[in-house]
Image (cartoon, rainbow, N blue to C red; front, side, top):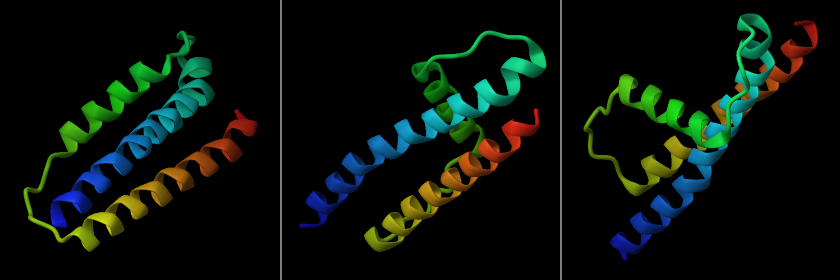
Length: 94
């Protein structure tokens, strides 16, 4: 049962990852494009940047319970949503 739950968590991580790329894409469009006069990026490239940032952030290597993993994923979605909301408000002033 634990293996199925972990597979479900992995399946849930995919849309969370895409959502993180989407938020990065929007923030890039709202702030980097006008400030640096660069081209907008596409979703796959934004997701690639998310991968790089996660790599640079590092993996702690700590074994977590399934409940802790779910909590961490929910917190991640909430944090990224707060960043999106904050960026959305700020982009009206740029």
